Length: 213
Image (cartoon, rainbow, N blue to C red; front, top):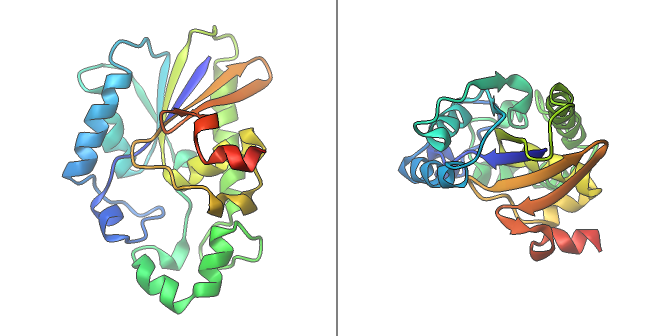
């Protein structure tokens, strides 16, 4: 079985570097085009199931990726982006200026990161992995040819990839953010999970490779 995990398209808040977290924002024209273009990856693919974060931007992305397909979509709160509490709705430029130490702790996945209402990176990863594993369990009898589409968010996706690649959360700050509509693939065979593709590229051709060496 293959898990196709796709990040949402660009939003108006992405373009402004405004902190979304679990607040809702909409795809802008660029994001809508990205999502529509990503649909080409799946147009001729038999999809066993479709899951999406319940956030507006992922719901919009999922609809555009599917296009005229009629696959049933299951929306899940546990696939939503990292909660950033009182930082949500503010601009990264302002937060970086006011709280540089906290921003660094957040970037490095430090357990010392503390912001009112925010999740630590370890909590986001635990939530994300639990979601992915529950989806895998639901299709325990799937064949190697089965494909499951999952639409989620950049930060939680990075923690999920890190878990299956055995990359420490503290190393994620040195790895490029996943671009909007990045398409990542995890192959599942029995108890084995293998990340084969990150943002459309073999893992060995990405900057994740350095963290694996």
